[in-house]
Length: 435
Image (cartoon, rainbow, N blue to C red; front, side, top):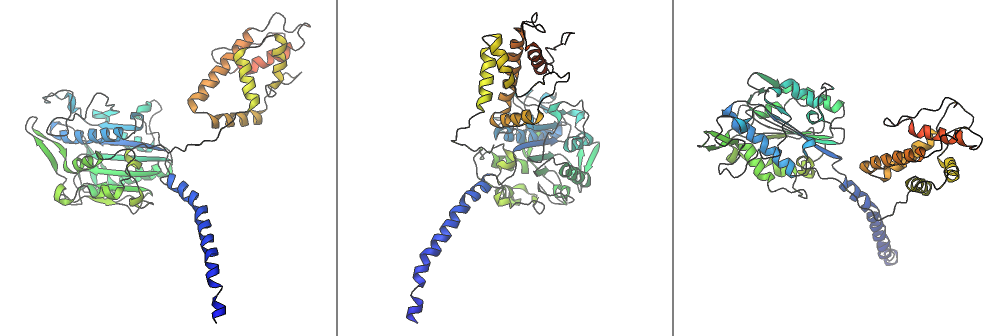
C-alpha cells in the first residue's frame, strides 16, 4: 500500500503547473474585462430645475452645484443639457446680481462665468423635457439643446423641485408623473439612447418617481420616501431664503472629494446622507441595474473618463498611398511624370468609355484602413489637403494641348481630374464640349 501512494507527490507539481498556466492564460482576459467593464464610451448629463420664483432659490442652486461638479470631473458643456426654470442670478431681489451661492459663507459662486443654460424660464416644460430624453425634437433645434446620446452612453439625470406622490411640478403650472417618466426611459432604451442611466431626484416623496420604472440598466436615487418631505438647508438672512436642499448638499459634499481617478463606488453614494443628517429617508433602487453597485464607479456617471490603451507597436501606412500623397504634395516635374502617375490612382477611369466608373470596393477598403489609422480631425485635414493638391495639379494642365495628337493621354488625364474634382463644391469642373 505504501508503494501505491508513492506517485502522489510527483503529480502535485504537474497539477500546480497546469493551474498556474490556466491562471496566466486568463489574466489578460480578466484585465481586458476590467478595463472595459462599464461598457460605455461617453457620458451625458441632463440637469433640471423645475421651480420658479425667488423663494425656490435653493432649487436653482442645487442644479448649478451639480452642474459644477460634473464639469469639474470632465463632462463638457457639449454633453450637458442644463434646464433652469428661473434666472436667480438676474432676479431683482438678488442682493448680489449675477451670482448664485450654495453655501452661507458666500465663498462659492456656482453661477460662475462659464455657465451655459440650454433651456431657461418658460422653455422648461414637461413637453420639452420629454422631447430631450426621447430625441423627438424639431429639426431646427440647435445642437446644444439636444441629447445626442447612443447605446454606449452613460447618462446622469438630476431633477429638483416640488413634488408629491407620483408627480413632480414644472413651473407651478403643470406636472410630470412617474408613469410618463418611466415610459420616456423605455423609449430611450428601445431607441438605444443609453447604456446605463443614473436617475437622482431631490423632492418631497421622491421615491415615488422611480416606483414605475421598468426599463433595464437604470439606477435611481431619491431624497425622501413616500409620505416624507425633502427638507431645505442653510438659511441665509441676507437674501431671506434657504440656499440648498439637505440631500443635494451632502451629495455635493461627497462629490467634492471625488477626482477623475477615484475608485469610489455607488454604494458609498448611497450612504452619504443618513436620516440623522437629511431628516428624511433617502432611497435607492438597483433591481433594474445589471451590475453590482459596488462595481460601479462614481465617475461612470459623474465624470467623463476616457478608456485609453497605449500601444508600443509601430503602425505602417500603405507605401503606395504614401508615395502618391508625396507626389501630390511635391508636384509633378513634368507632364510625362504626371501621366505616368495616373495609372496608380486605383483605376479611377476607363479608357474609351463615356461613363467614368470607380472601383468602389478598393476605394472603400482603403478609406476604412485610412480611417482606422488616424483621428477624425486629422482625416478631415488630410482629405482637405488631398483635394487642394489635386486641384493645384489640374490647374497646371496644358488645356490647349488636350485632345490633340501632341498629347496622346490627354483624355485619360482630363477624365481623372474630372473624377477627382467633380465632387468639390467650391471648384466645379466642366468638361470641354469635344469630350
